[in-house]
Image (tube, rainbow, N blue to C red):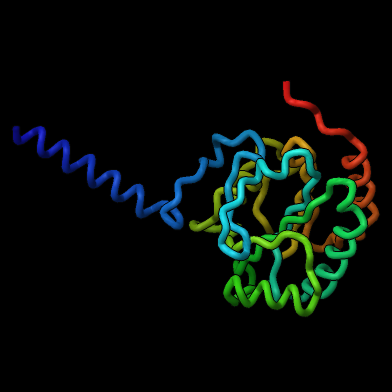
Length: 202
């Protein structure tokens, strides 16, 4: 009887710890179990849960953004221009604010949204603040930085690193923060990826 009670208490404590340790108390897939970015769930800038599988069939550019960075001004207008040019071809930009570098994204989700909309008239998709490195790194960026493709893997070095994702959710290229959205190499690969039709599910 005593052993049964002890086991029951141990299981209860284990479940409590696991629940508390999960961000926002919401379990997500482990990055090591993911086969593409479509396996992840995230929150948008308004706090709504979004399945990245909802973007299946779209070509994506994932960017960790910041409002007070020297790269903010060169990137935001170009990102918006890029999005408007290619959105009708199934292109989406997913922007993830992060405060990891120089504390250059200190505001709340609401203030970040207001900044992006008012100053840069952003219409592409904004997501809730995340951590892209360190002990509190979010699952999506853990997957990206530990990607099985060595050309994709590696720590995020600064704000505005970019990942290009094909219609099947596969990360096909990484561009460092100094690569602007209108860089010819990025544009060339984006257009080639957009020209490739979605592979239908069998």
